[in-house]
Length: 284
Image (spheres, rainbow, N blue to C red):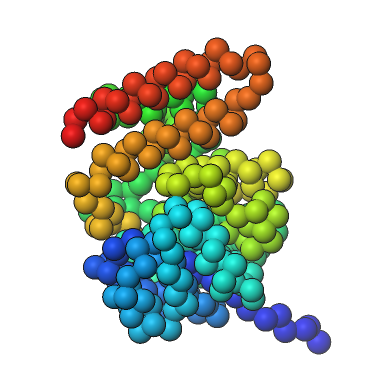
């Protein structure tokens, strides 16, 4: 007689910041996304009473934080609420999980113990596919993408980095978007979760790189689908967000390409990203 195995347990973490307009839709989508045992956790980087009330309404654990950054908040939620979790889903609050999407991701991961993280097909609200399974940025392509992505959207550096022209097929990737990412708990713990040196952006790139270095695979499973609206981003915050993106990109590439041999390249990279940041700031 075969021994019955307990279902995989999933902790669903979302990091909120003035996200009351979108958070209920995300939490509503969970029930149709999986039949597995789940726990919900809201890490609130704005520490608002209204967000706490929404979390409590859905039976989610609530963590009030003083905006330590996205990855730091996610790590804190895993420590606070993930003691029994086999998997951790980290998702933005403006994501809507598709029916059965979490079950599909978990099934792929359970079937292959070498997979450390999984990402679904992510579309915008209008159905446009977001390139969420990407290559790690190299020193040239990464700098080129950061500098030219808004000035010259079709530039070859961004095309190589985003793999935007590839069909959404089941495959491994070097990193997966943190907008919606399922991570094996043992893999998450092994690499120490998100690097808390990133305030915003590139924490998912960095996590993918460290999972690969630790021998885990990052797998894109587009049979699972979610919608990411970006609805609670405001024009007022776009400049700050863009500057944070530049700072995080620089940090990732500077740390990845260390040593005296890369010093001239790091100096050029720092100058290029600094120029892009100044151009962004001047458009305010």
